[in-house]
Length: 84
Image (cartoon, rainbow, N blue to C red):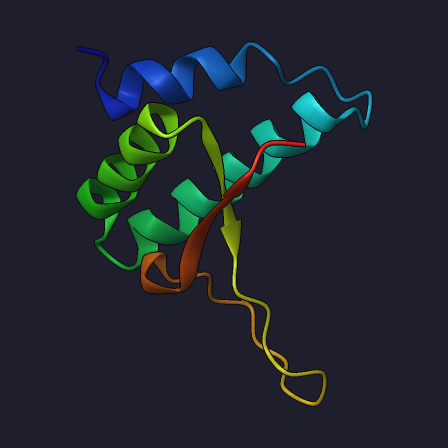
């Protein structure tokens, strides 16, 4: 069974700065990981990443209401979405 680290390493290989769907998702995962590290939620992030892979989904984020701005991506607000 692949670990969260293994899955993330795979997506990192998709990062080519082209703006493609694969590239954008790899960038999102890097951003989510950094925020998980800042919030001491790395294990929760990896568990969510494993779950996403098992269900053939991607990790997305619950966006705040338009009038609310914040820059802290919590694992608890991450959701699984259909792959593009």
